[in-house]
Image (cartoon, rainbow, N blue to C red):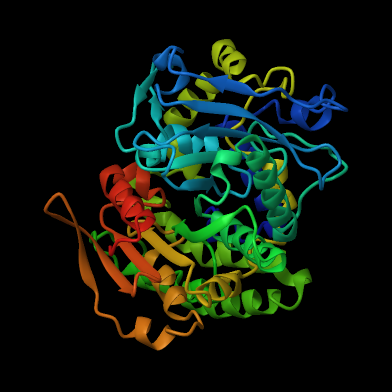
Length: 479
């Protein structure tokens, strides 16, 4: 997602700051082998259909992420030159034969969903010795879940350098065809209730992919993908509305002073220009990169002096790039996924000989003009159909995609019950007799949840709360 930069560097060209920040990110993630992936990583994939690795209860749970039946493999995309999407699928711990199917998409753009699987909402976490421990709050507790590496060249997914993805048109096509291939392998999941979920930049991915599925289902009259809902956490969806609330976190529930009055005054002036550029980006793509750079430098950059984690203001962190704030965790997961045992277990070595990386800087760069586009129109389309439900949730300690902007764009959605949603009363979200959040909801169709004491990755910070949230949503219960 959008990382912070500091106005102290305003004498440098914005593009140069972007370049320096991406180099820093590559180093932070231990991805100095990026050039190897870009130049050599696809040499062994030409004209090759990857094999499927099936995992059973007999495998060592300390190595393979728990004992639930699961499957790691590749789907070759028929709409691309030579793209193979890697996924890790875990059956439900409760009732795999009847529980719904969830497709999880991490953000970035360019972040591997395996990072989320192993640090937030997947069946296991990685310990310091690179063994795994069971996550009792995994989202496959009551759902069959796919964690998908996408767009092309993210994580263990691979594709032709001549056929690079750049925007949500590419994303929605690829995800649709991935799911078609997955259903070919798993016909038992056809017509199962399907939910798309993700966080951060998946605020672009999820609405776009859901739009494609919805349109195809309407065209085919009856498709294999029984789309019933979407869930987006701390997502970047309506950039026009959200850009109006970038400075709202100056007033936060944690009493953290994020900037002085002089800095705030300058940032508010810059915010007006930011909003204007983001609005212009919607009809003139040539200004989209300028909009992203200006807003990041002059609005988000105003927070840097506070010395706080941009993804969680409860934490002190003076790094310019918030990925450094989670460096130890990323290193453990990187070590685990690049171990010979795990690579063999996932059957990726013959397809993806280069090391796994948490984030793909080349993908982030390829999507630079997509960043400030807005996708609430696809959410509105879904809400026009009474069979599709929408859940938006935000950890309230996040600066990158703050909860004020999240609630604002949700309230601004143009759908048949917009007025009713705008006037609903806020109520407490209670888990285990604790007040864990605030809810705004109408008829279980559209729900917004503010998660207390959580940052950009709500499932990491409040795992029990996030699990209760998603399970109620999947069951079509009131939050």
